[in-house]
Length: 115
Image (cartoon, rainbow, N blue to C red; front, side, top):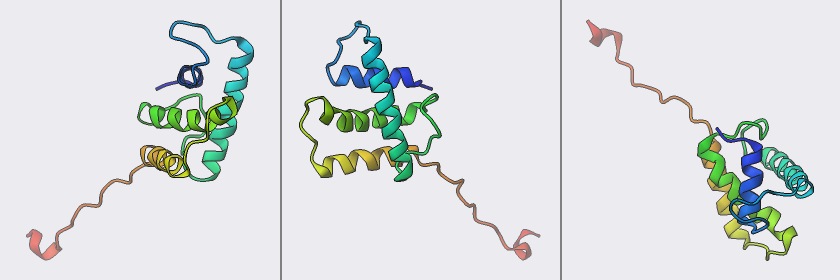
């Protein structure tokens, strides 16, 4: 399990706000944390993210979530907006990784055949 601080750090690293081993200034960390919360709420409303909050992020959705966050936050940080199709693919990858799968139904046998 990852935490929200791990997500904020990954987004900062991917946006080249900080380098490896550098600490994120408190103001920038608070801003990125707030933006991550806002984007996560939007993704939940659009049924792309299925976790209640960012305090405990399952490992299997951490990378897809970080990729979506970088794409969305990057446009406010001076990066060009990603192509719409690329953004949709990233969000669907997140949705697929976050979707809970129901247990598979097993085939039953007829009672007459179980004797």
